Length: 284
Image 1: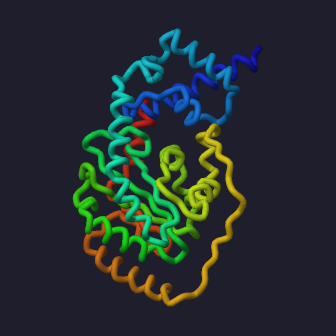
Image 2: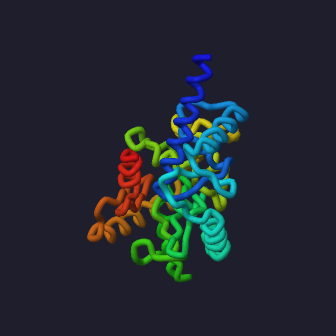
Image 3: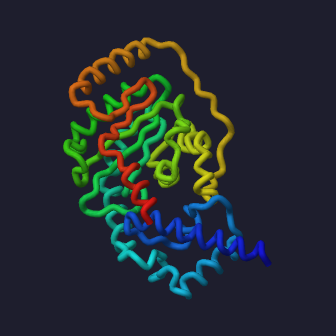
């Protein structure tokens, strides 16, 4: 009996913690979303979790409407409307994603942020995350920016509605997130990442390299492929990569603030939402 009660308390806490985090975005969760992205240090049996969730809703510890769950303290956004906007954004930009697919060094193109979370609205831009071949980061970034500008899809001002913001590039030799930057916010962003296309199982390799996210999201489990060895041969393109890297860093130097521009990672994090969201999470 004591163990049963301890499990009930732990499960209730995990549910409240998860809904608290999502309340920052005013976003309600379906049962599937809540169970899959449950913030917890342990896993719970499906039937046990479902019963605890129903008990909490029945006692009005949390609210439920239309099969969605949320905290009593918030007025949630329309889950259905946000889903509709997100699907519309993805459909309208399919031809652009197909265009980017012609860049041979892109191993993974995925969307992040509000679009990945299916919480986009009419004001949303589209944040994209790209994994490149080893030693092809800066060439890929250059071609990505060029193609997006040609089709007038490149974001030119902060959070420009409907535009694409390629704000994070890493190459396949830099898949594992640095220990000092691991937290619930980063783990959540990794779990929510929506792959648009991939090559050589890059999406699954990225998740496998970051299985530390299970510390926060133990129910987020995927079957990983067998180990993939990154092959890299010396090529004249390596010298072009170095040259292009130098040109772009030189161009960015005058405008650079907090952006990370290194050999294996480019992160345009001038307006990083991480600290703000983590601080809001602490206040609840």
